Image (tube, rainbow, N blue to C red; front, side, top):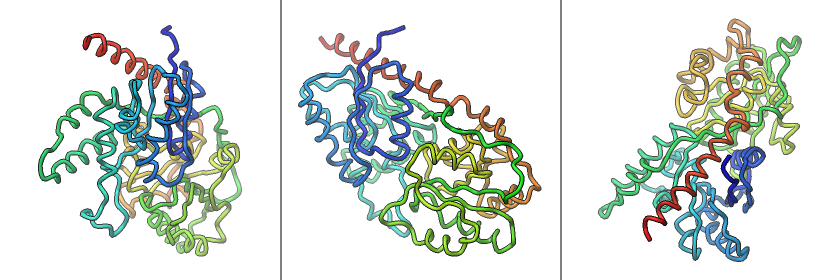
Length: 377
């Protein structure tokens, strides 16, 4: 086995799926990992200022790691410019600003493009780039292509060509071992429907709650658990839905304790996504691995992260199709996928399996950089 590397992981948004992914990989990697992070707030300021903060920490520490693992909220171009001898870097995209949807009603011409250019400049200086799904890689290349077409001149098409050449798809993992499995065939209470996404516009909560309120008005039996992180500008639809569906709610709000959150997942019968933007779908994978039948759009990253044999039963075309499929699952006219089948189908996402892919790519980053340095002498 090759020698373990010293990897410096830079994560300016230490929360949500970013934190879960980092902690999962660090538990299973063969490399030695140092972590520098910042709290998960002020994302725009993180993209502008985190690079200089991390550069200062690296210089103060006085040690040069073998390789950097940097997530896409870091301005890698500024980071490398601020370091005297920057280590080679693997740039990992959880999301990208070229493809992120604007808020409802926000004119495209008024969007701040500086953050997309930050991502573009980071790709220009990274040794290797990885995306969490093929869907996101395509969206990045298409979004950046559109961004370059909007430039009046001096369009750096070479960066996109480089992105295609040095990038690959590297899916995240989940901690299968810490997820309790829902017992099959629980009798008694109505089925529990779970929402476990960020309380933001790109997850389209209005569609989810509109479907549930229609089913409730029709007398369809279900209980409701709403988890996920909420922020200062929480969409009003959450308050309205809690009032309208109060008699069916068994849980409402963010679950801070990981063990408690995992137990909630294992209580769910069905987990639903109505996202307009989803580059991977970590929360859906975790809930499905705990035994909840997933219902997700037949778009975004979902067709590639869920097994093809599940598509007919788990992916819906539009809101009407979601309402029909959810009704059938709740009323029992359509059988849900069993907990054991769900877990077996997602076993390949276990971090015990996935960590090796990250380790391999980090070693490739270092090896490629050494070859480039040797040839440039």
